[in-house]
Length: 389
Image 1 (tube, one colour):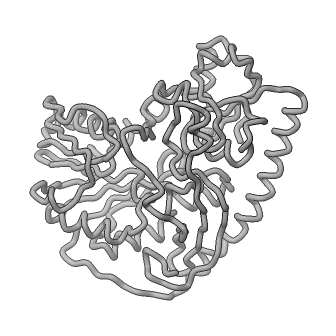
Image 2 (cartoon, helix red, strand yellow):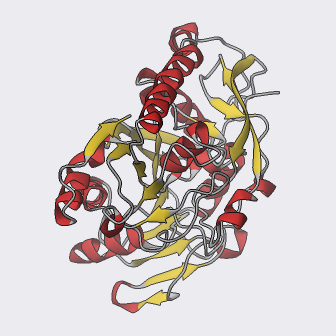
């Protein structure tokens, strides 16, 4: 197996999980449907040449990005503030009067709509959003925005963007070089690409055990993302981290030539620190499982906050038979009163916490703690125990 970024065969096993949910952001109307949701193998390899981690067992046929797929995070005020800060940074540094902006993988369209509304102050030309899961009007006249329920490809070569936004998409792409060289072909001369993706270094250094998903077939750090963009025909202008270092922000500029370099150079300094993760993961899982079992014996009703990728992964890691965790809580009304894949846990709204007798809430991401506390106070649940795992 060769690395999809640097083409090196110098790869080694990193982590194997035999059954994982294939599409975390699909909700099911009945528990029976959820229990029958498909699973697949997560067989992660580490490239010692560029430090990419990728799933050699990944198959695009096993993921489904349709209108019932919802990974939107704009229901969260904390995340919306984060997005506002990111857009402000882009406008101050990289968006100009007259720009045409394309967002590839725009989801339900929240981000590009917000960006164009704010950028109207500097008279950008307009924009286009592409996503097979998009739901809504095809045109937003007020900001000259057009949506396509489609992939961004050759049939749209008449659209010549000055800025291409690729947020939380590249980690879903099994052939990233081909994907980015296509962007290179379609974009204007000198166009910018803004790419945002989870930072592998943050996941491994913090021993986060629920951030490896089937949907994410590749995991990048600064080194591997720079290499990918450079070989795809882009020069890196800036790379930084946001959301308390969880995500990388990368700005790159299209150059005239694309140069593909095959290399087997081993960078031990980058990969050496990764090798402790599988053992650390195993130890952390044992501690969490013990806590859940202790709460179960004490008849404490436990819920997870968030029916996103982290919550669905956590529930299936520790409670496949729906015994230790009572339910998941989510502020997204689209997910409420539905069931998550495989484990079949029900998703409830914060207003139902008292009804379900929840006594402890587990939180996957510390960035949302204050927002969750506010939501608990709003629903007269401020005395409920909170545990950040």
